[in-house]
Length: 112
Image 1 (cartoon, rainbow, N blue to C red):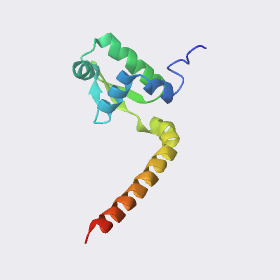
Image 2: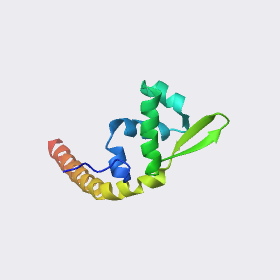
Image 3: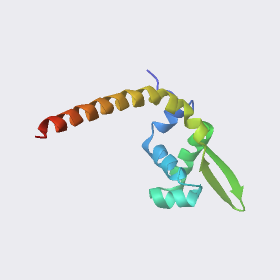
Image 4: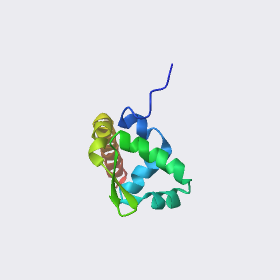
């Protein structure tokens, strides 16, 4: 079975760990390619390749500032991932709430 192209949607794009690191960095603010290269300790062509994929799926936007290109996160493009994960978040939240109630009951039973 052939693998899906990484540029088809946000899910495919974030499957690559380096791209998730780039998104984490851009979540803190805008960065140049040089900033990203320095922090990721990767070669510039590698970082540019990942940025290209992220731009193609709309997760990253770029603007020119003189001779530099500044990248920023487009968090709206993460919406499809959030919508998919949201039911699992609710499931885990219910389980943690249940565990909190059980722990509170145990704590009450231990008190003399």
